[in-house]
Amino acid sequence: MAGRAQIATKNSALIAMIADEDTVTGFLLAGVGNVDVRRKTNYLIVDSKTTVKAIEDAFKEFTTKDDIAIVLISQYVANMIRFLVDGYNKPVPAILEIPSKDHPYDPAHDSVLSRVKYLFSAESVASGRR
Amino acid sequence: MEKEEDGETKVEDEKVMEFLDSVDTYLFLFDSLSSTLRQGWLEFASARHSMGVSRVNGALLDLKSHSAATSLQVTQVDDSVERQPHFILHKWISSDNGQDCYKEGKFREDKLCMKIDTPQLRNRSNALLSEEKASARNGAPLDQIQKERSKSLSVFGTLVSPKLRAAQLSFETALETLVEIANMRSKMLSSFDQLHNELKAPTDHKLKFSSGGAVGNEVNP
Image 1 (cartoon, each protein chain N blue to C red):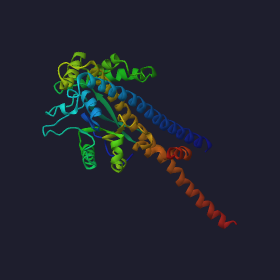
Image 2: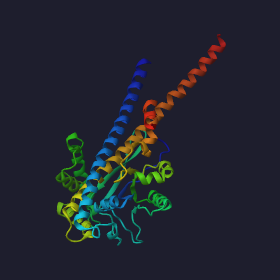
Image 3: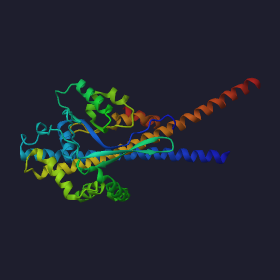
Image 4: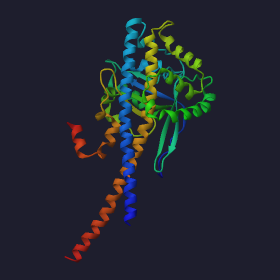
């Protein structure tokens, strides 16, 4: 389509994470952890002491960095900054809302599915609201 | 005229099917991800139980400067209407030999992708398949991968519980699923945009037709 922005090709793009300790540690075991020379990490561990502002700042930072291709965010954390997540519409980095130990994945809250769900019948949309 | 309309309807139906397929696959992948993550969390909790909380916690995470051993390659796929990003996972590539592995790794991954698309391979609990895929994607030998895995585990000490190793494999599998989800997300949004444009176009056409009809009614009551 004319006017659509080019998607920059990247060779060593990172996966950023905003999630609870166990989820982040698990993915770090899988080798996605990156710490730069300024000791900035590509993850934020969210616990009971983490403020909404810190989560917002991390989200904004990860979605504006050129070297990040996917941002994983626990869905319950995404719900805390829902307006930011739903307002995000760039193709890269891709925002993926993942389940956490205590909060299973809920398709009704997924920002991508929310965007496309109006194409379904009025019945199925109404059943989702119940 | 009728043939053209039939042709257009057929194309629209195909687009609708493509969109619904992508939504279905997206939800299926999330289901698969949930069960893989549950397994990983359980294994992680078992490792914490056997090794002790002081040995398995976030405070031990390495904050020294280091590059990610697992990274992504992002390419652009040109659809008829949209440009979609396509994500490729590269696991356990050390920064020393990363670049050399890409070409061979991509070739081997393409060969493997032809096999992966069969339904039989949706069961991802086979660790050997995970090893083969990692090796194929990266072009890195298996011992190199094991070396990188051990390096990642060494944060928790030299001798670690087998449950921690199992948790590592589970989270690796979860990563693969997440990359598939990211690609399916791109496809779904692209299909959605195409359908959205299709739905808007007939509305404009109907408006022109109805305004012409109204004028006709005024002239001929």
